[in-house]
Image (cartoon, rainbow, N blue to C red; front, side):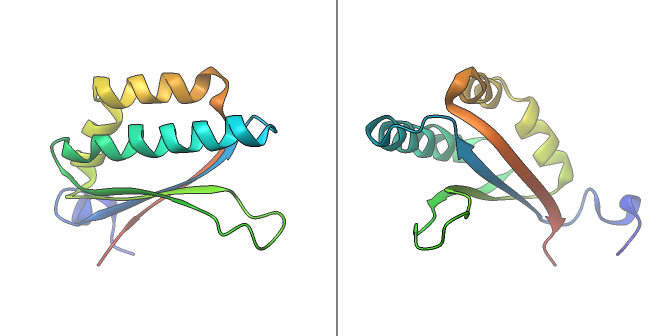
Length: 111
């Protein structure tokens, strides 16, 4: 892996987040899932964003995470700007208001 200074401003970054919903109630989970998809994918027009997609797990294997956000950014500076953007912060506040529990994130250079 190249040292940070060699890639941070010139390589595409993938930002992957797996998400767990808090609610156990099926109807509420379905509603929140759809709203989460709409809110996150609406951020795809922010500067530096190449793509944002949210996918549901097939539900075939117990223990899988139910949702994954798969996104791409022009470079690390674009990811940092996205994370600080007021629209992204608004979606995060909603997610953290009892919609999303656990999450795990991986950012990597897509060469």
